[in-house]
Length: 88
Image (cartoon, rainbow, N blue to C red; front, side):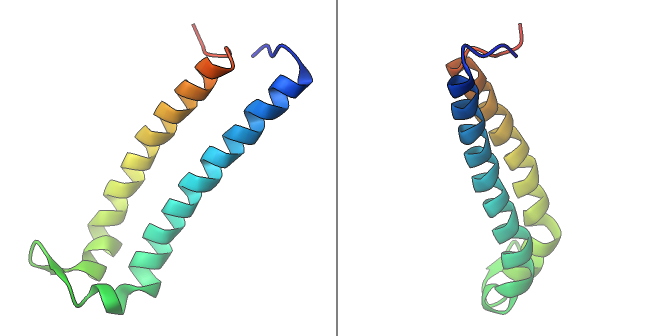
């Protein structure tokens, strides 16, 4: 990566940390929140024949984690292009 200036690099990493922070917040809410903290409230709802809290703990979190990977890749590719540091 070749940045034009140190300010350019700092701005890139600030946005990078923002992306990672927001995705980690979603990861935390889905894994810890839906699977543990809010499980009793979610278990009052059924989804595909399963209690929603159980479904999030077993299946929903996995789907969310895979989706987070694709979101991260797309957002980082856009960020790399914005700062002109993408791979060729």
